[in-house]
Image 1 (cartoon, rainbow, N blue to C red):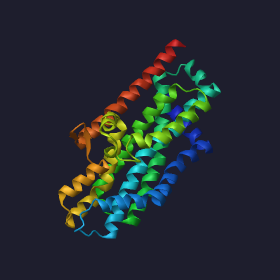
Image 2: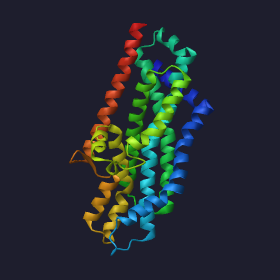
Image 3: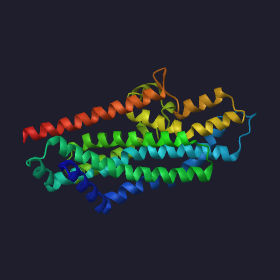
Length: 298
């Protein structure tokens, strides 16, 4: 077994052994699901019903399925990034304990060391987020299932890419942290603010035009749009089959960020994937470079 694999195995074991980090990561999507279903479900439902023409009657099950898809997309869009920050706290702990200094003066290559932290955080976050996907899909099935197999598969791909992005982002930010206090402060800020700037808590379309343009430069908003689209596409198709005009469903998709716009141009799905993948690759490259420069200085 090579050095990188040994370090990855070590980091994953330490993460799941630390009950504080593990349960903090695991409880995040669970709390969001309870809060969303309890407090925001009715608001989302009233908002969606208000967007339908008065002459159309949509079944309660279909409306519930649409709301459940919106709730699921919001939870997953946030959890893929916030859980990654929790899973990546091991790097900060190793700095605090001095373990990382021992690694850096050893023959371990900087790229191997940095990628071991990234890969371990990625594995841990994927385990938690895919568990959240299973729970959310069960919730959607209980409320009203209209997703196709392709929707589910694309949703899994969306979550995988968002976790890669969240892990890369947390790796770059956590690189500059060296104490538990700093990590807790950053984690709190990310948990409180990321949901807003990525459009999970409130759709980007509900913000002012200027803020919409600014947020359209953030890669996380494209990931949220992908999750939204694949979580709700089946329900929207069913609405059209029940007589809702396509223009009405497109307006609703615009309002919910299923359709995403860069300034006035609609961003197609392949472009969303390309933006998210490019941002992830750039962050991983920056993270490896930072570790290499740190090794050279030492």
